[in-house]
Image (tube, rainbow, N blue to C red; front, side, top):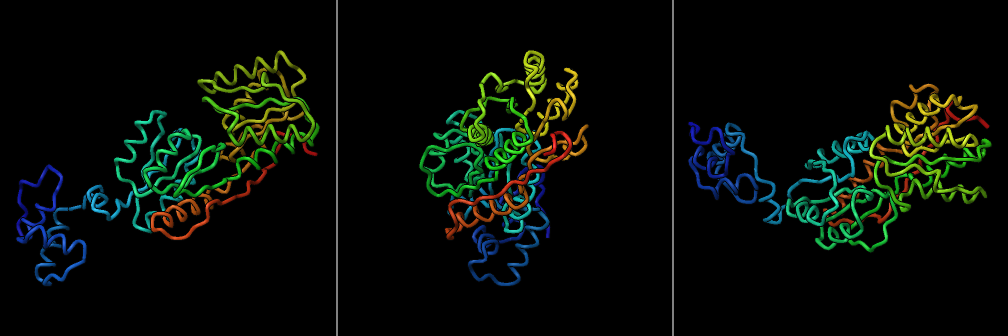
Length: 340
């Protein structure tokens, strides 16, 4: 079989396959879709042409014909963070086994972002709730696209065709704060994410609820939030530690921020944990190699990823699935906090 040279250097089309195989485009469609009988000799010519030309069907075209694109989009606020890597890795493996591919995308706050996502004809979305607004979630919901939403903030709108996954962020934050308070710490600083953050963030809400339950008072001046960089957050913490010697604990939104808190403590001659307890969140690789090793909270990322993709595929296939999946987080106690 001779391959026409005109297909070299450009995307191979179904027409190119038909010409190479010496059949009509209709016959090529029958062979690829497996929905009509085709004589074995013609079928083999088509398959040979597909292999030699490395032809791949256009998944967007498939979706426009109601066959599904076999594409899933994962939307998060920040892809450079390692927080989602293990989770997405598990989702990607499980999706691939079911014939799907996962694409990653950082969110944008404009409504145009939603329109662009919908126009790409993804079969389903997995969305970090903090990555988008309630309005954007409602727009996705109105489009009918199936969604799995990782709950890391409070959602105040009704959504259809969606499954929610509680990763353990809220309860993990509460258990960490509870442990620090029970260890004798009374004057806490909350070191927030390096971006705009709101009270609806479930980690911060868990912290506030546990502080309130303990009977302690927390002033917003002890919350470091909205910084443009980790260096800026560290500088603000250094200032707080210098001006407020009574501060005896720092609850950090992530392990990376906790590492900066350890550095700030060193700059202020605060011993860890004798003078200052520091906690992180995520139990990332660095947490056990810091000096001292970091007390942190571990989320069941593998199980969260497995459940997220299973639930999303069930939605895509119109199968029954639970509306909410809840996971527990695990407190990992190390040497950066005072032991009870």
